[in-house]
Amino acid sequence: MLSIIHNISLKPFHTFHTEVTAEHFTQFQSVDDSKELIHLPLFKNTSHLILGGGSNILFTGNVKGLVALNKISGITILAENEKFMQVEIGAGENWHDVVLWSIEKNLGGIENLSLIPGSAGAAPIQNIGAYGVELKEVFVSAEILLTETGEIKKISKEECQFGYRDSIFKRELKNKCIILKITLALTKNPVFRLEYTALADALKSVTTHDLSLKKISDTICHIRTSKLPNPEVTGNAGSFFKNPEISQEKYQQISNDFPSVVAYNSGKGKKLAAGWLIEQCGWKGYRKGDAGVHDRQALVLVNYGKATGAEIINLALEIKDSVRKKFGIELEMEVNVID
Ligand code: FAD
Ligand code: EPU
Image (spheres, rainbow, N blue to C red):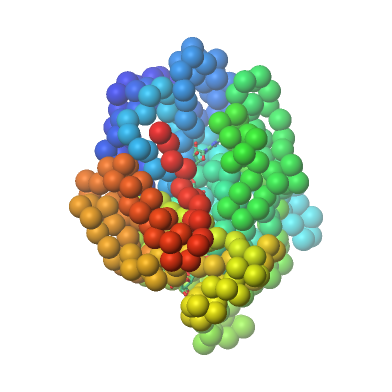
């Protein structure tokens, strides 16, 4: 039977580490637990939040209702042929542990997604991406529990409608399902993905012979730890905003006025580095009280200790305002704000 705790601090359960409490809190460890969860009167009659590693969340205050921590574990090999291995992963598995598991088995596809905090179950929600790779490239399906009907169903990659930091779980299925398991197809013949400039630069002197999944993963871990704050030391949720996608016309106008603008080609035209936009507005290294902008990555807002969610949101709004005024671009938050 699921045990419920009342008025518990959520500080250890999310990476911004702001001091907030949950009115009710539980953990579920299996599919059966999740079925029990959705039939609890507390789940049905109050608001509820499914929590993974809490690494893409900002709480604006104490949480009313039930917070349910997903701890469904297990990595199972479902099928394999000479090229691929299909692997089913419990949603509560730590994502980076899954990456390390794949590297140990010499299975390619997710090594560029090394050291992204959080749970495997949350990975499809924003289609996690880093260093030139997105989850959708290896994603096969997810097993989900629809919380209103109690139906358990498989949702395919196509049905997930993945986009840049986007999926159906952020839209039609938002707050309507629990992701229980995900299935990935990992390759037995890894193709190294080195197109991301920072990664290619870091591996310049490595010969093809010395290149391996582990080498790529270690290099990415090194790059990440050198520029992103460790949430266990300084609270944060990674990039606070998405990199904005703009039309070619808008890009031309900005690059005329600001020739050093950092931009990449994207399906919709150009994607701009939001960190560059924020830095140009003078925010990099800014601090007000305990809320601040990281001094090595302006896209990351930080909690130096006692910042509140409201202080971090206010800072985010000031940043949005200044980017809108200087560049005419509306930044969109990547972090899930929980009111
Ligand atoms: P949580 O923060 O716990 O939850 C996020 C949202 O998903 C919430 O709305 C929650 O209710 C919902 N949710 C969680 N689990 C489930 C479930 N099983 N079923 C239904 N809903 C659920 N992201 C990237 O894409 N690329 C990066 O490079 C990257 N780098 C980061 C670096 C740092 C230092 C940090 C702190 C974060 C970074 N992130 C990055 C963001 C974050 O790690 C990912 O978004 C991650 O997938 C979030 O997983 P989580 O388990 O912590 O989700
Ligand atoms: N830049 C600046 N100033 C800054 C930060 C960045 O000018 O303060 C410019 C630099 O030119 C730099 C470029 O922006 O070369 C890109 O920076 P970086 O490589 O750090 O990547 P990013 O675009 O800022 C994105 C993701 C990260 C992901 C990295 C690596 C988004 C919103 N963020 O950041 O994901 O790890 O690429 O692939 O797409 C996250 O989603 O939480 C996250 C950390």
